[in-house]
Each structure stands twice: as structure tokens, then as C-alpha cells.
Image (cartoon, rainbow, N blue to C red; front, side, top):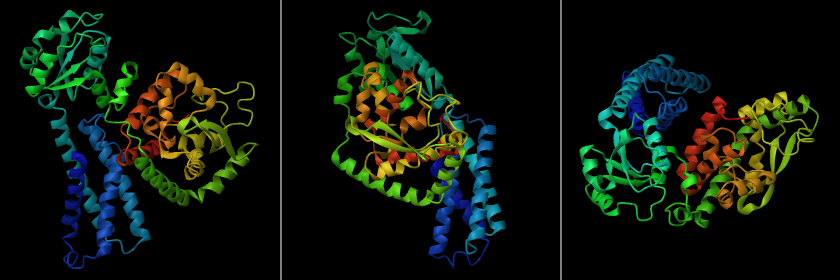
Length: 445
């Protein structure tokens, strides 16, 4: 958000610096100019987002920032040049456009370098002390180490007699001395990672740390914040019942339904010219129907028929029955591979959204043949049916296509995180991320 705010400010300054040379610009400013400036800011910010200039996990060395800035500005130049050609009254001439983009590009590169130096400096990293020496503590410790640009593991505190997997060199003391250890190690966060807590948690000492200004977190909550998913293997019913999240009430469902209908109608109007062309390509490529109909499980466990453009041969499961899709699936047709890669095969699901069977954003609807097996194997799997399935979702943009029980287990952790934090803002973020995933063809099979 800091990077985005800075980019918007710098984009406005760059535009003002270049156009102020035109003496009559400010005097003749009208509504059209205001719309053009807004478009300038939105397109620059969107392309910066598209090329991962706001993703904290990517490599933020100077050369990587430079490449992303150049790519984003190149695409922006093409977009603005096209708009200027189609709309002659657009405020940017070619000279003005090039100068403003060059000015902004230099400022943007410098701004991102400056922020990255502060973000990844050791002085600004969070120093974390982990309470516990078992497998859960090891998992949290490895997670902290993997994010060493923002977090620094100062050590483990021994607590209880659970199976120890932490070496003596990593243990910095016992739970009875936790406040002194935190002060000595200059820790600003304590993560409690003890599997069996009955009578073993140093409540008095942790409360003292909390009151002294040190942030104290549960391992599951810390894992959730770090990864954007829930830790299912350590999830207990009380965490679902007493959590601040998981508020899927009727009011929220009503507003989500309005947004779904508006988005589905809007997208349908945009892609309408493409639909007959896709249908013709599917028909010419292989024998069989254009649309593929398949039973899926939706909200409340109710089954519905999902619509997609057909991407496989009509006899794809004649001998094998229901099986998982796999990479470079031989059952796919030539056109089908392209449709899956570009996600264009999903467009008929807009009709499912309009019918109220699906939402724009939500968990991926699964086949009933797999649901019973998955519900028996994976705890809390049925909870994903508490809301409508979606064309896209948090699991779809965060993890590769699920092609096994292990993959489904991982994707469920994202689905439950989405259900817990469901909101209009979260949905908008997922839609933006979906655009990036579709444009770069990630995760499809």
C-alpha cells in the first residue's frame, strides 16, 4: 500500500511537471481532462500491479525492480498510444506521453529501491522468539527462516515435555525465564508453538510479556498471517466457533449476490463477440457438443450442472471413469489445451452465476464422485460448502490446480481462509489476481 500510494503521487507529479509546460493546460482544464488524468493513474498503477511491483515475496534487487518497471511502462505506453490514436482529444500527445512516462519511470524506480532498502534492512525486521521445542515449533521456525527479509528467529524456549526436535544450540532458555530472554534477545514478537498445552503454557510470564509491549501470538494465527491460509492439521473446532471470522450472514450474501450479477452481466457483454468464435473452434477441432455439462457440488451440498466449453474428447472417461486432471492431459483436444491455459473454457459458467448456482469468487466446485472421498479423508472439507462455489477463488490464484488428495488438502486451507475473511475488498483483490494469473497462464491443467 505504501508503494502504491507513492506511485500514484509520483505519477501525478510527473504528469503535472510535463503538462505544466503547456501554458493553457491548467486554464482550460475540464471534466474530460479529469477523466484522462484518472485513466493515467489507474493504468500505471494496474500495470505496476500486473508486473508484481507490489508483491512483497518477489526478489527486490535493483535489477529485478528495473526489469519490472520497464515492462510495466512499455505496456502502459502501448495502451496510452492506442487510446490517443482512437481518441484524438486525449490530452497526451506522443511527446508529452513519452516524457511523462520517462519522468515517472525514473521516479518509480528510485521510490521502489528506497522502500526495498528500508523493508529488507535487518534493523527493520521483526525479531521472533518461539515457545516450544516440538514439531510445531520446528514448522514455525522454518517458516520464519524462509522469510528472513522481514523476520528474524532469535531462538526457541523450552516448554513442557513434548517430543523435542529442536537442537540444544537453538534453545535459548526455559519458559520460566521467557520475559528476561525476550528482553535480552530484543524480541518484539513471541509465537506460542506448543501442541499439547494442558498445564504447560507459562500464562503468567506470557501475560507479563504482553503487558510490557511484546506481541504474543498463537502458532496457528501466526501461520495464517504469514501464508494467507489456515493450518488445518492444528485446527480445532473452537477456533472456528469463537473466531472473529466465518461470518457468512444473509446481509453479506445479499450484497455478494448483487455484485455477482452485475459482474457476470458486465463480463458477458464484453466477451459476447468471442463466444461464437470459441464455439466454432471447439466444433471444428473435434466431434462432439460445444458445451460440456458436469454435475458439481455447490452451496449446502446441493448438486448443480456446471457449464464449460468442451476441452476433452467425448470418450475421455469412458474406460477410466472419474479421474483427476493432470499436467499435459492427453485427453485434451488441441483447442482445449488453449482454452484451459487461457481460462476461456470457464466463460459459460457466467450462466451458472446468473442462475444463482455459483458466485464470481468462491471455492472451486468439486465433482460429487470426489466429494465423498475427500470428506472422509480431509477434516473440515465439508465446510467449504457453506458458501457458493466460484469461477475463481483464493485457492485458485494461490495454489496450482488440485490433482490429488494432497493438493486438495492444501487448497482447502486457502478456501477456509477465504470463508473466514470473506469481504467485498477481498473479492476485488482476488479478481485482480485472477487477471494476472490468466494473462500469464499460471496454474492451469
